[in-house]
Image (cartoon, rainbow, N blue to C red; front, side, top):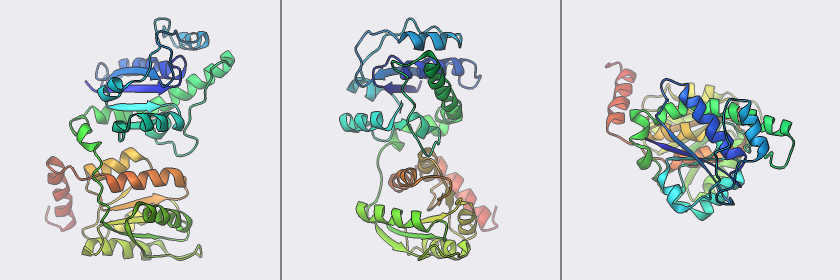
Length: 322
């Protein structure tokens, strides 16, 4: 059974609320009931501490008894034992990765895992009013509802069987990358080029060269045809939504362009679909998330096996042989 761990600071408010709320949601879902083990811990927790009074009260309003919760500290054994770690803030995520680098690939903020582009932190209600606790509870519930589909996927054949393998970094720093954008994606493209240069990738800018209005298919074709010919290993495309770029790129035989606005989809696009072009929407996500998506996509590898069979069928459809 896969395991999910929520992490906050003291393990008395946010992470236990998230744990017990998710356990209730899972129990009411026929596809996920008794399919996940959920736990919580704190980065600076006092072992054996009780949940805060207001946390107990606001979960009581949901019909959940939090009085039996006892706080515990995150440690290496706990990190090793779980499959997904969802933190309440970016700072929690960074601290975990600093102290437990082996957790790379399975640590996300709750909002990040849910696909939230901006403002990735869950508000901290500690020491505040009952109404603030209610607001935090409802904030957590909102994003827990958004991750239910992903948990169902992870519990499927495609998800859980490959989870450990998929978390291994398999990037190739020697790959040649072509990147292009229209006017709407120009600024994001320039920032991504800086990132790729810093990471040591061999990147070629296919334009556009300013924010003056242009037609996105021109640049989608330049990048896609370069990838299809083998001149480049991967392609990156940016426009306002990413939709036009992905549609245009997929008209080039041999291209598998994926539009991704969260890191989960970016990893799956490589692991399962062997996507060789990534499309992004500059008006949909911010540059911080875009960089994480790009890094994840470039580092991920193709799992092959049953996924290769499925991708081969896509190729046959493309060639009119299906």
